[in-house]
Amino acid sequence: MNTFTATLFVLSVGASLLRAQDDDGFERILSVGLHGGYGAASHSASFAKLPNVPDCCPEYTGGSGGGLIMGIDVGLPVAPQIDVTLRLGYQSFGGTMTTDEPITVRVENDARQTALRHTLETTVSTIIIEPGIEYRINNIGLMGGLRLGLASSGTYSTQEAFADPSIPWTYRGGASTYLPSSGSLTNVAGLQLGLMLGARYHLKIASTLQIVPEVSYAPALSNNVQDIDWSTSAIRFGLGISYQLTRISRLGTPILPGDR
Image (cartoon, rainbow, N blue to C red):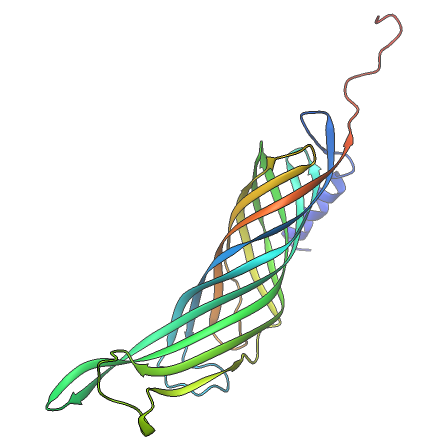
C-alpha cells in the first residue's frame, strides 16, 4: 500500500466521525458538480519521428498548444477542512512542434543560408481520472492528487518545407512540401500518469449551490506514445458549478429541567 492510498484510507475511516459544518448550522455530506475549461499545454519531446511515419527531422524537442477540458466532480468531506475528491473528465490537447534544419542553397550565383522546417501537429484525447484531496481555508481550496489518463487516441500531421518561402526552390515535381503525412497515432499509451496541483474558490450563490473558478497545473509523469520520449503537461483554467448535499447539524446541548 503506497503513501497516497494509505492517506485516503485513514481519511475515509475518519469520515464517520468528522463532517464539514457550514456557518449556518448545516452539515455538508457530499459535493457533486460539473466543470469545464481550457488547458495551455506544453509538449516536451526528444525524438526524430513517430512510429511508422516517414520523417527526415533530426529531432523534435517540444512545442505548445492547448485544448478543452470537461468533466464531473465529487467531494466527500472527511474533516471540517478536508475533502477526498474524485474527478472524471475528458480532455483533448493539440500541439505543434517545429524544428529548423540549417542548409545552404544556391540562388542564381549566390549561396544563401536558409533552413528546412519540419512541422509536426498532433491532437491527443484522453479520459481523465483524478483522485485527490482538497484542503479548505475559508472559501479557498488547495488541491493535490494523481492524474490517470485512460483510453487515449490521437491524430498527427507532419511535413517538411522551406522555412523561407522566398527561396525559389521546390521539391520534386514542383511540390512545396516534402513527405506530407497525416493519420491516427499508433502505439498510444493506454495508461498515462501525472500529478494535479491547484487552487479554487468556492463562491456561494445559494444555500446549496456554488460557482467554483480554479487554476491547476498538471505535470506529466509518462509519455503519450509507447517507446517515444514525448509528454504533455498543462496549466488549466476552469469554471465549475457545485451542488452541496447537506443535513441539519445538532447544535448546542439539550435544555435541562431548571434551565428555564
